[in-house]
Length: 211
Image (tube, rainbow, N blue to C red):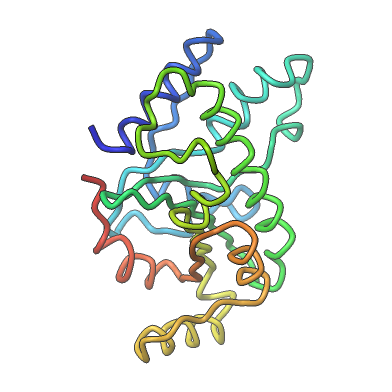
């Protein structure tokens, strides 16, 4: 069983423990939906992969467990759009933003900490099940700095200069990352990446393997 499968079994048992359900199995296209613009940032014509829709866990079952008196979705903890674990046990949080890059900073930073807190809360509550056989329970901070990666995907249309820089840096064997993402890497993650939907498909999805 892959670590991704272990994670899903753990989530299912966590939900069952509290009498909750969640339709969390999804894909990049579906998790890229922007309510504000009523548009999918990652088009369904692109190659896709299975992911976990983090909002489906955070916005109803997890909130109901930790904040049962709340009936407001806005009371939910902030999470990234998608989560997946690769065959080499790297954990990927993926966030889609259909807006200008300079307007994403606060939201992305908030979700970085909120998402990781929720994950750890669930993982440690279910520790005795021993599903997460590769997780570093004795030092989750070190685990994150070795294994957890954030990918921010922004609109090419709304960020033409950044999109060109992303593409040019990739071709040059370099990486373009804004300062606020670099800071998150220093504090939380093993690595961070900035992509457009096109570069996400070409340099992540087409190379990705879950098993």
